[in-house]
Length: 309
Image 1: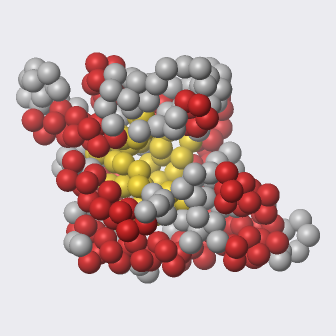
Image 2 (image 1 turned 90 degrees about the vertical axis):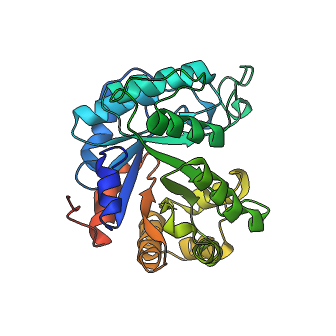
């Protein structure tokens, strides 16, 4: 075992896992996180806590992770390279593991121009692949980037994750980007939200043919659509998102007042398809301020009760 996390144990045991996501509030109000925890607990196996997503200032990922773990939920701490140099990154990794965090997702981070402080300076002292390498070196070699060694038993035992986007251009390069992250030392990846299933199947076929699915656990990203407006926004305004017209047509064809429920049905259909694709080890369910629907989705998908190992 690399980390002794629940997520690692379940994946190693061959279970079809579910991870969830929690966006912390734009305040110090811990009750917002605890309220979301009520819907996620016992319905997912671990929960990502985002790190100032879309470059908007929020409660820190570490604080959100600690609140979730106090509520009995295993956390997956997200860390972006945008806001920290290598000193702060390594310090936060050591601090997080000292407080019981056992999973970490390594990300570049959205550019600050998209957020609420566009005049701020970014850092990007490390990129996401270098961040993966750094965590792996700290865990497996007990070394900091400087070469400073840690005493045996004091190294950060983390299950290392990363994000991948199967849909960005050029498409042919995407699976090679996955291979680069595997070579850097990633243990699991979570994908961008999937709406174009045909393209995702092709991506997974490439990954399978290259033997990559034997080297990393791939969790497929699912976000239920609430409306045609949401689908159009994601199609036109979110970089790297691929929302086919057929998805929008299905939402538009729903009875009046039923678009949100149709969005959930689409998500359920996707989960059933994903369970049949070789190499898919689970799903990453990103409800995006719709956490109260997670229990309904997971139960309807036939994924309860969650397994234990």
